[in-house]
Image (cartoon, rainbow, N blue to C red; front, side, top):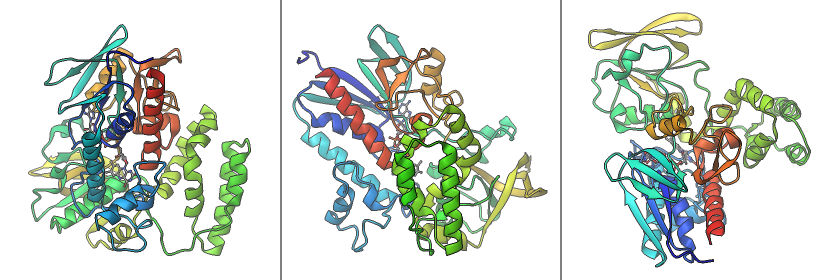
Length: 462
Ligand SMILES: Cc1cc2nc3c(=O)[nH]c(=O)nc-3n(C[C@H](O)[C@H](O)[C@H](O)COP(=O)(O)OP(=O)(O)OC[C@H]3O[C@@H](n4cnc5c(N)ncnc54)[C@H](O)[C@@H]3O)c2cc1C
């Protein structure tokens, strides 16, 4: 049945998830659609990740896995070749810059707009959505600057929220000019004095970006970092050969296993790999496409145990760095990594006095700036994103049981209500599905979500 009026779909967030959902919806021009994209904060298409503060920052997934389309796996590689951006024969296993990837997404978006059919209208709002009010089957979206936008469906594609303000630092420091709470904004690596050190909280991927950004900007003083486990990121390839006896994983994946079987077997093979001097990354790479299925097959208790005991180990192997970025960090002469936590922060003139517990003993630092690189906040109740906080208060969305994102249906991201019924007009996509799917951050997972959701909507409303 053809609808007379176009279906109004509003996508809040114009990063990868937002634009790829729109592009996939636009491919079908039989259903009359008006797609509204509300985006504020980062450039449309590029989002947080692909409009980096430093142009040399590399992807953390090889080019060959970064196609925006599941059914054209070499789409990004072909784009790089067509634009003469890589002369390397090993283009698929190499890492291009995040800026190049951002240009790829921009070009996909521009082409989609140029080629869109007559049945699809697109409106972009350079505005911030802060609330949504339900009105029967309609949703009224409140924007900071534009009039209320009324729509049939909303897709939340708001991406990563800023890191949480550290609970062990006096909250008055949050508004200090010495505190930089958003590691993805350029201001955190600019306008430093040439005499005093800097402290980065966190030792993950954002810390690496920040150290590279500071160094490329000419910052030559000490860069201190602190986190409970210290620096544990691994190089993507490394120098050790991969462990090859990985067929056991396929057997386990085909069985009805529990977390214990998987971890015990992996541990056994890890020990063999250690003895042979081989790397276990091959195991992780085999598991990676299956992690969502594994996660959903585990009981809540098992998932909680995974988060408590194994999350850190999984994260440190799964979040690998291009080898050159890893080498940069290892060889950095001014990087001082502390293993511990912040005990106290106070002002000492125009500097910040930080007391750290470092491997059990107290250390005192004087720094000009503290940069928070502790990773995105996943708890929607604490999120810096006003929209998510308001929707949670209104009962339109709720946190998943692990407080890693929003409670939603694993297949299409329909938001789940407290009675476990799906909302028919509110969807969520991207990193907010972490609690539901576990791995829901990188392009290989996200492109599948954008395709599944757009297909579902077209089928449902055609
Ligand atoms: C620094 C960094 C590097 C990364 N590198 C890689 C990589 O190399 N490979 C990989 O596969 N993945 C990488 N990722 C994962 C990355 O999150 C995804 O690949 C992808 O970019 C996420 O896209 P998204 O659309 O969900 O979110 P985003 O790109 O964050 O887009 C969300 C957009 O919505 C806007 N927004 C949020 N709330 C509102 C609101 N209320 N109103 C209006 N606009 C709003 C935001 O400002 C932003 O513009 C990286 C992530 C980060 C943070």
